[in-house]
Image 1 (cartoon, one colour):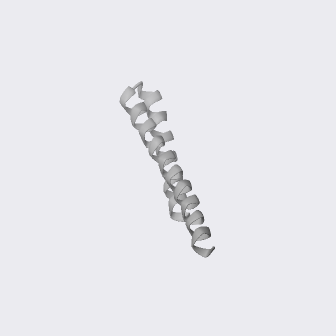
Image 2: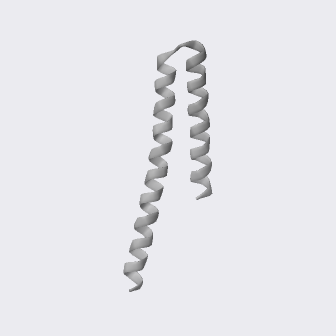
Amino acid sequence: MFVILFVVIALVAWALHLMQEAIEQQEFSLMLAGLLVAAAASGMVSAYILMNHYIAFSWDVAVS
């Protein structure tokens, strides 16, 4: 869990850095790259939440 949290925080920091560089250099491709990195971070969080709920559900079914 902590590894995924660390990776997501690193991805968000990298996305913010890319977007800041895009504003300074007026470069659209850097803004797009920052958006894609942020989308990857949100996808990781979504997958983690979905798998967490699935594992909890499957444990409840297996126990009963």
